[in-house]
Image (cartoon, rainbow, N blue to C red; front, side, top):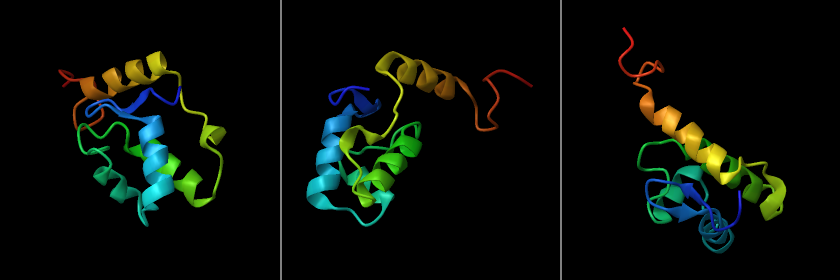
Length: 94
């Protein structure tokens, strides 16, 4: 994933914006990343990745230390996530 690719696809919050927020604001909890343009407050898909980024920042790891998927793979996986219902099954399954 490139720095300008969106991590939060609902609110179009880029990886660069999140890293800068982590660097400048130094949140104490991963949930505080929601204050960065609403990241993580939409469908919820990106929360796991936001938590990974928060953990990396807490450990002072470099920006590129995380192995995030490429933009297309990330978007495809999110689309699959959004097609699933609350039980984790594809929508429409009984």
